[in-house]
Amino acid sequence: QVQVVESGGGLVQAGGSLRLSCTASGLTFALAMGWFRQAPGKERERVSCISRYGLSTYYADSVKGRFTISRDSAKNTLYLQMNSLKPDDTAIYYCAAGLAACDSNPRIDEYEYWGQGTQVTVSS
Image 1 (cartoon, rainbow, N blue to C red):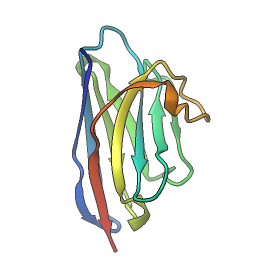
Image 2 (cartoon, rainbow, N blue to C red; image 1 turned 30 degrees about the horizontal axis):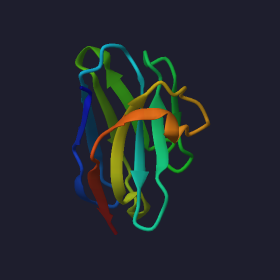
Image 3 (cartoon, rainbow, N blue to C red; image 1 turned 90 degrees about the vertical axis):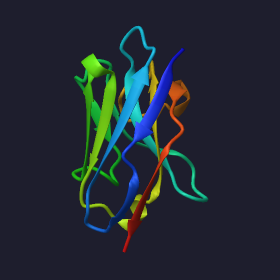
Image 4 (cartoon, rainbow, N blue to C red; image 1 turned 135 degrees about the vertical axis):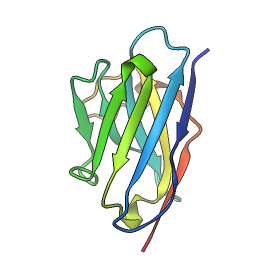
């Protein structure tokens, strides 16, 4: 059984940094992984993704240059380093894994395994 667990959320002031981690256990082969977020009253959006073997990444325009996605395949762990955080980054952040391609198409429905989410709150 696949289990996806996020950690690292919290409260931070604008301009600060946080590092999110996601561990996916029970996977028998590599999958693409992504970070998504959902703010109150808004639809879930993809923040970033990384391909199965880490050869390609994609970032939403709103986080490009501020966030960095990476993965440690040996540990089945995904990371999201978030710098220069803004109040607009406040949301529940979700980690997901699936057979989705990592490209400009968010492909939310192609991510099969999801974590419960971790809250990120950025104060002004």
